[in-house]
Length: 186
Image (cartoon, rainbow, N blue to C red):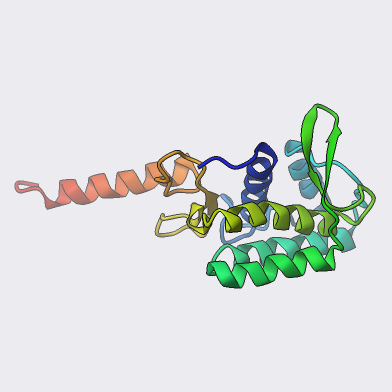
């Protein structure tokens, strides 16, 4: 499945944002506990526009992260309700823009709108594509027993099961050990 390039970029950002949650992070800690960590995440994903770099903004982004983690687990029709709400609350007015080295893509808020509002609208726009193409099955929770990480499966055959190579390797090792333990003579 291939979505528009800006949709894929946003879906990858959503996963990165969602996986800063303590239940999904590599460290087991909130990876957005400090505004500096948010700045690093935004820079890594080349997020443009207004940034206040304060505690209020961080709290709003954290609330957005929690919303995304909830939407990821919803059935399609329930997700539509949440996506529409985000678009309405953000007063979304989609338009094509081109800036920096990004070709034409959708923006639906002003660049000086609050960061969390812009995030929610961009997330909603990406999820619109997922919903319209009936590909909610591409939005998954990691199949590793001890992980709550989110993933977006952009593979051609839709077979991605783990949020990271680390989780995949760990689960492969568990399966290997179980097979070894089950063999006669062990």
